[in-house]
Length: 352
Ligand SMILES: Cc1ncc(COP(=O)(O)O)c(C=O)c1O
Image (cartoon, rainbow, N blue to C red; front, side, top):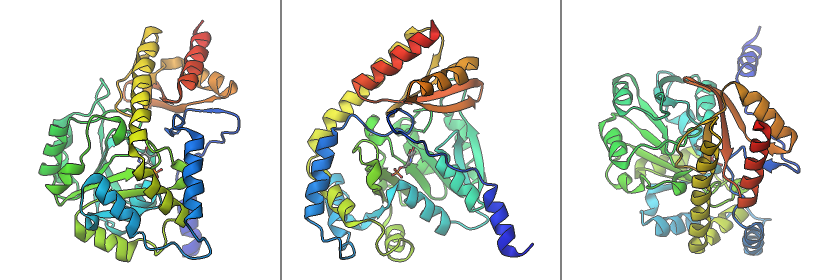
């Protein structure tokens, strides 16, 4: 077999990210934000497209970076942008690691991150979640000497767990190497690690417009890190035109209307609380606390039946199966009040 066939064979054995079709479905499986008003988003796109000449390559992305700099009160030379956080993760892994790099992650963690490590043949060291679905700080720290890089999704996908800020500060302080803190769901939690980036050169915080901003289809992400990393990323690693003109412009417009967003975030957090209470009231599931826009619960040996029956009714949630001692984990994204009620009603009916 020649080298190309060998490589193709190896790649073909990797897990494939399963994208769901969503025609006419209640989409509660990918942690998107359907609470945000669709018409409002369309108006933004409309305005953005009118400000662009798509015959030309996207203009310099510094306008968006400057808006982000103002928004977060962080110097613009510490901000890099990408085609979604996925692309930023991909490029960081592809270019800031070597075959010998060992990456410390939690188990479970964001599945794309793990899949990318596999693609680049990067070794991972996994710290499992405890029986109460939290990460043990000492257990994590005990692995620090074995690893070159640390990745934490904060809050974690799929558990919704987040370390306290004091613990996260300690983690970044103690780890000798880059710490990637993925804050895709940070807006739904109590704090952000962004201000720690002023203190630690080894911290890379990744953020996205896909979740709280409700623009997953736009593919817009950014990260905050020390200026050497940002410089090399933006000048040498990143493509010349990673983000289309309309997304660049829309991102800028979204940041000008930030107040609107806090109502949406509060509504989602409120609905999350209600979702946890209502699922617990059913008295059959183990339901875990969450700092994100989703809730993880263990439906034990009934999880496949529940997952399939919901799907047959057009309600898509995420099937995870075993996590540690919990054998039938399912994850539901918090949607609009109406979506959440439909989901809860359907679950209640299934348990009768
Ligand atoms: C932890 C985490 N990071 C990043 C992403 C992807 O974000 P983006 O849409 O910006 O690529 C997701 C999406 O589900 C996620 O769960």
